[in-house]
Amino acid sequence: MTTCKNCGHTFEGKYCNQCRQEATTTRITWSEVVRQLRHATVDVDRGFFFTVQQLFRQPGVMIREYLEGKRVNYSNPFFYVLLMAGFTSLLFLSFDVPLPVRSISLEHIEKMSPLVAQKYFILVGLVVMGMLTGGDLLLHRRAGFNVAEITVASAFQAGQLLVITVMLFPIIYLQDHYFPPANSWLDVRQLLKLGVFVYLVVVRKQLYAVDGRPPALQLIRILAQIIITIAFYEVVVARLIMKMI
Ligand SMILES: [Zn+2]
Image 1 (cartoon, protein in one colour):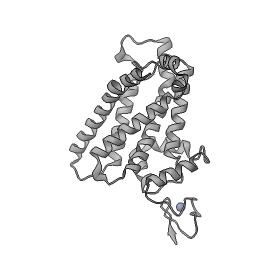
Image 2: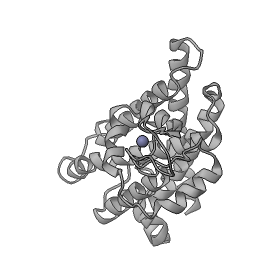
Image 3: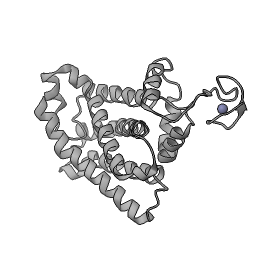
Image 4: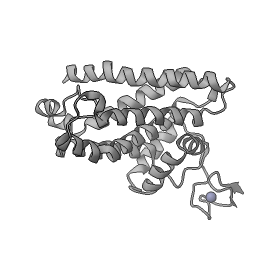
């Protein structure tokens, strides 16, 4: 007899007969990640909108539960970020809208390498995942997640930041075409940055809720982490990307 990690039902066999989750759902390791990736292409949109919704409602809680074994209703995290990255690249390229970080010119990238431009947000997604994973490994080790698990968490977050970007895209487009801002502080892109900031802080407050530190100290550490991450991305990574191309 197996107790389902998704719904708690007790059953016999390879799959839960209530929710279809696999009996073998284990802790996420690199081999589990590779196995999931091989299956990812099969169930293209399984749980996509549910994943979008849950990653807004209580992102850190959802990610923690996913890591602990509630997986069957959600999109594969790597598929999630790749799908959103492809879609976001397509949007910015086809509507010819300057990127959220204005110092990077997609037009310039397209002249140098159309392929990189078409996949630009995949590059962004990978960079963001790397930065979040690195920061979390340094600062939140007490939570007890392994590198593969933190990478999975970062993939969900990078994917959701792209969802937020896509949601704000129509406003950015209208602004650029009809109400160009008087200065960069009035640009809707600042709102996007604020959204990204708040989102990443909330995720960590929920995901790393119990780490034994006083809540105020934990919040300060998280705020510092996300400020540094965003500043690093805007200044260092953005320049590096433009230099490389
Ligand atoms: Zn079940």
